[in-house]
Length: 208
Image (spheres, rainbow, N blue to C red):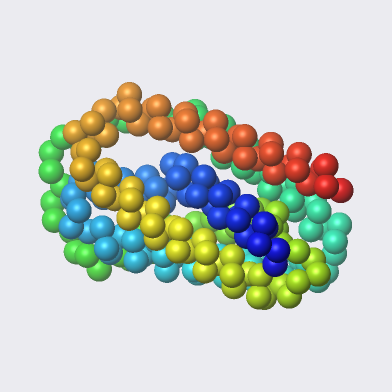
């Protein structure tokens, strides 16, 4: 894999991981309710969930690559449209008030299992990986080697991202409970997702 492809993947992954989605919202929710105590359990669950989801999606992607180049090209276009859809959905997402009361203590194992399930079993995550990763693969390089490198890179960045969100949310709990702040975060993330989808589709079209 060319080093410039890997650097592009790192930059794109950092941007996409930072955008509020189901996993980020789960991390923030636990941090707001329980503070820093469950941070390690949340991060571990998210990491294992990403490994599961990304591995499953890449195994399916390998079959698609071997079966039809036309299907793979269509998949890239569908992927761009999917990113735009997620952006619009996030922009329009309603924001409810967060209760000010402290949440009851929860089992760290239960928090870990919840974080894993939300990350690994969400079918949108698998579809997202199938749409996102092909943008950075090189046809002439070994498929499995590239997938291993990209998966290890993404999971490492996901761990850092989840830990950062957990720490920041727990440190700014009173501010993040405000609906206005969460609405701004959602709309900023939605705009970035829409832009990512448009850029992905446009880049592939120009490269064709």
